[in-house]
Length: 289
Image 1 (cartoon, rainbow, N blue to C red):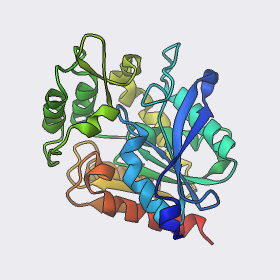
Image 2: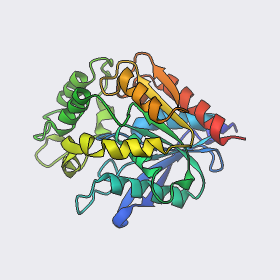
Image 3: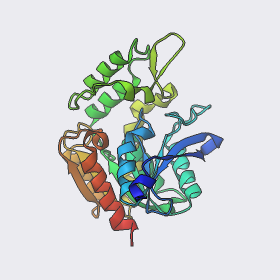
Image 4: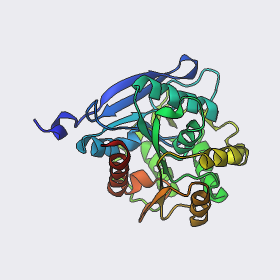
């Protein structure tokens, strides 16, 4: 039986996060393969990395995809703690449970978590960092657009088609899927019959100030980076500009850089083949051999 057949489906995982909450995840590929841990963006779930997980498994690598606290199948924080400190503690705890060096791949919120974790005790298990369309100094208009989408529609949607309309408006560069089934991973139908985004609304508390409050901390963490770093930017991104890339390069002169044509802020899912190839090459270069 081929390796591809062996690892064509993920294995479910459970981890313990800060405060004892349960974090859901899944593992693709051989247990002893070079390890990459994937952290999704705000409002997403681990399923946004599914194609990348399969691509790494096919390359003989192990990909662990996580649902962040308050997202997907992970617990919502009972105390509403979605601070960056809680997110980084969750990541470092997961890495400790996995027990070996890993490349951390983070999109947007997940990328900030990965970057901040490199400056905290326990970071030694982070062997490399892939930041997906996120830098310490993003474009404010782009960030505002993301936050407005995440905080929008508190009244829910009457149908999945209505939700799909909202997503299509938010992602005009992406072809609208024929089926709305994929949205069921991010929405839940409540007793009133309406569909609601399945993440903890408390996650949005204070996020409007998050950029300014954390820029200095993020830049300090970036300045200290000595491990391998790959920055992936969607060429159509309104969150990370060419100027933002240049400023990050000043902080991390040794960084590697990939720009994906036809992709925006959601670069990994916009053009997944190009993204996954870049991650496989990075893991191969810095963890294999």
